[in-house]
Amino acid sequence: MRRISLKAGLMATIVICWLAPIVTVAVLAGILLETSYRQSVRQEVERAAENAMEQVQMRLEDAVNNSKMVSYDGTVRSSYRWYMQEGVGVTLYRAVNDYLTHRFSLDEKYKAVFINFWDEEIPQSYALCSNTAGYEVRLVFREQTDGILEVMREVDTEIRFLLLDGELYMARNLLDSSFTPYATVVMMFDAEQVLRPLAELGGSGGVRVDIDDCSFRLDPRELRLEPPEEEGPPHPLAYSASVDGHSLSVTIGMEEYRLWKDNPWLPEVIGASAALILPLLAVVIALFTRHVSGPIQILAQANRQVQSGQWGYQIDSPPPNVEFEKLYTHFNGMSMELQNQFQRARLEQQATQRAQIKALQSQINPHFLNNTLEIINWEARMADNEQVSAMIEALSTMLDAALDRGGRTQIPLREEMGYVDAYLYISRERLGDGFHVYKEIDQTVLDQPVPRLILQPIVENAVEHDITARRGGNLWVRACRSGERMVLEVEHDGTMNEEDRERIRALLSGDAGELACGVGLRNVHQRLKLIYGDEAALEVGETESGTILARIEFPAG
Image: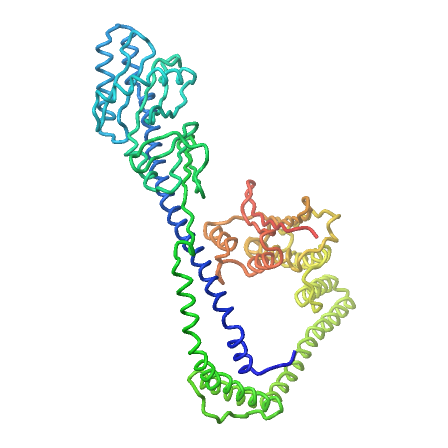
């Protein structure tokens, strides 16, 4: 394709393709607006539904707990037991009625609470009416008594929710001391108090409520409970909750919002806006040429000058606006900085060469130290001083471990044990016969790779911080493989005070400061976390036998 200028491209885009973007943007804006509105409405309904569900769930749970109190507090049961002994029905009626009145008369969730005894010789029901005409409620309940008792004779102590003639009931059997049902407590809910939060959600498809096997549809206008329709509401929102082991689910119907159909004026507004934009096109082109494409060409020309080697080139043209004034200033500053950078390049190169020479010298010094130790070692051997020779060899081994000019991060366990043995040899020579070392090393893991200097610092920590102070002691070094993990242990006889325990806890929790614990332990802990992350662990604590154990675990291999 033939390249064109920015100005020509802009003009072609405006002249040829301006209508399509406007229409596209308008359509997309409508779709986004419609989607956003739907989401907003849905979120609002969801928030209201969740709040309503919480209120209804809380009220139903309170009702379930009330039914449990009737069953468990013993007032009705003891009155019934006394009746079975004395046979005085009036006393039973008064006791139970007084109990229901005292317990539920001020509870607005219920229209009435009844207790029906299964013994036909006892009066049929005892009623408590709240916020309603007691006689009317008794009449309604008497009509439903047989149906409720027929259902409850098939269950034990389970709660049943029932919808009968537009009234919502909750029933629970009462058991005597032999766990035999002798009565049923029935609670007639006041839908205005219990279900009003759900009815206020409205919705074109209504609100369907399912409590266990009891299903009904809420009429939000008169708050009537009606049998649910076979077909579900359009565009439903479903919510569910648990009420003390019982399922509560609510389905809400939502109206479908159609932006273009519900707002017929919207296409006309879009067309008028498109017509009004034409007179502005010429002004936009002129302003774009003066304030955008022209300054860009000046910047491009200045950039070519710098690329050709004119470092420090400055733009002298006056900027057309504040934005390009900043760009011109930044470009001029960058050009001068580039010139200064090239001038400093030679000095930096010379400094780098001097640093490389110093680095080579630092590599020569350890080599010279090793050679010096080797000469001293041969002098000791020629003087038949084997003890001095052995200590020099151990010191040389530890020096190699510390320097490790090869830069290795992992070495075989066999080599790590060599560093440990060298350190222990020097320590035994220093502490004498009171220092005893015991090693339990699985020979099959000696070739396993381990982080370099992962075990020697732990041994050194035990010796320097405990055994040296007592001028002797016992030390155990163990290495084995447990499944897919390597296990290294260092145990020694010693004691820990509360300050030591606090330091160890600070180390393992990652809160250790510079003086929280020994450098060796902190270094091992940090390197384990850097290499293996959470798959590695360093534990330090006291054993049941009174010794101190440091245990390291990390993935084998």
